[in-house]
Image (cartoon, rainbow, N blue to C red; front, side, top):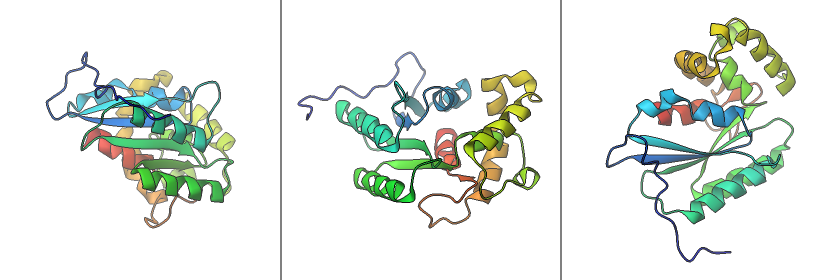
Length: 204
């Protein structure tokens, strides 16, 4: 159903912002982990950026569900030049052909994708460890990655989620490109993540 009227840009007026504040809209596959990460207070230090996160609801987390929620949000509000739309999804169990189709749909809408292979927890793990230290295998599963992360959190600032991750974010920004060295690839080989491309926009 087409919207006959679009709501004003959804800026959070309770946050300090400047006249040329840009919005970064992020639709996530996850309901908790990714939204919690992208709403960390550290990202709010950039007054020229506001982040709006659209999490999964009721387990509807397929790539097409994530795209649908982002598209509906884009149609509901007015947006301007400089506003960005991102999908944060995992390769995990989704077949390549499904993702190729999704990527083409996103290109048609000028949306961007930050995909992790196998899952978002790889990006979190890179906050604490160097790529050379991890020695991850090409068939590393999402379950394996989550186990590595859980073990690491036990030794990281008492597992304080928000403070810990932002404190180590520059390590992740340095390490993730080492796993994403084929810039022509539509999504990274396993293990790999393109979350760094989105985070660079949030803190630039």
